[in-house]
Image (cartoon, rainbow, N blue to C red; front, side, top):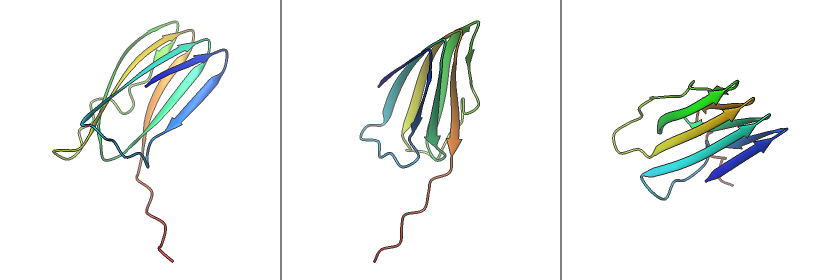
Length: 97
């Protein structure tokens, strides 16, 4: 997945995502804007990136989940902007009728 933010912001929420492969790579580019990526609390997260007058937030970086869980690699580039990663606990499933 590739995310672009220019002169504005965006947010991607993945707490309810079901990953079809073991590794998922997200490329995020923020130019004078911001991107926030919220990942589930029970996956491995690795954040890499570079910020030039900007920030590649590593709040969820190098967090390791249980063995065998999916891994999300976020590669960020921020030029006068921000790419921020955060974790969110998995939401409980809605009650069945």
